[in-house]
Length: 320
Image 1 (cartoon, helix red, strand yellow):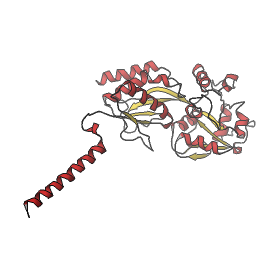
Image 2 (image 1 turned 60 degrees about the horizontal axis):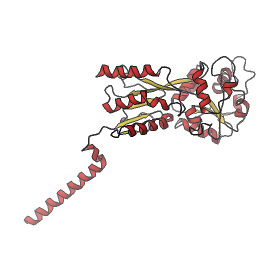
Image 3 (image 1 turned 45 degrees about the horizontal axis):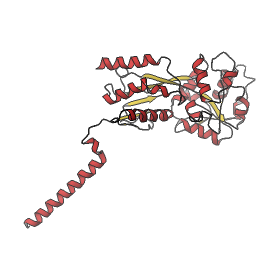
Image 4 (image 1 turned 180 degrees about the horizontal axis):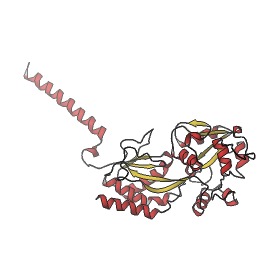
């Protein structure tokens, strides 16, 4: 074999290695090799995604070097997610003593129907009492329910997978998610709303952040939110019926005892007991500044927001 052939073969090997190096660089990104930035990955409950995306955008505008992304969850949270924002946390595999959850806000759950359905025509003006909700959504027909319309007249929809809204709604009335009657829909909470829009007699439950248009502040076309006994006094007042505007609804809930309304915390927590500096900084910003966006996106304030921020910073100081 000639010396020239050997050199040609070596050159070919070097060219192949160079090509592989270029491909690897493109796949991992140049930041992974040179700049060493730590990307923060967030995941969690889907109905909070618009709010989370707003937080990410605002935080990155104020912190030019921050790299934060949101990864949509499937049946489980993505392994790469460091921060979880959830309506019904699953703490399996997490040391909750070392990585506790913090309440960043709250969400409510209301009955909602196709705007042209007989259910909307019957209950949108007079509202639903607790007794009627139990009879209609859970087939609880024991006792004196002679004034409740036969629930077989309507098409009820619920979530198939275990989900925060379904658990909050059912638990508030003394039931489990599987007790909610109707067709079980797979996917996200938005899909139950799509189902009742397509069904002239469709009825379900959902949260204001999905029921209302966040820009117009009106109930989304095709839907009708059903008033309930928010303060739990056994009757539905004029104010409890005037909920066509999102801000009216949220103000009413915040100012009342809300004893009769399914409400639950929206949590934020780290998957790792020792989160990165960047992840800690982002959560600190959320609890101090980001929470100001809660109302615009259809959520309620935490009952003691300052305490949650104080608890978070105390944990950081202790761990450092």
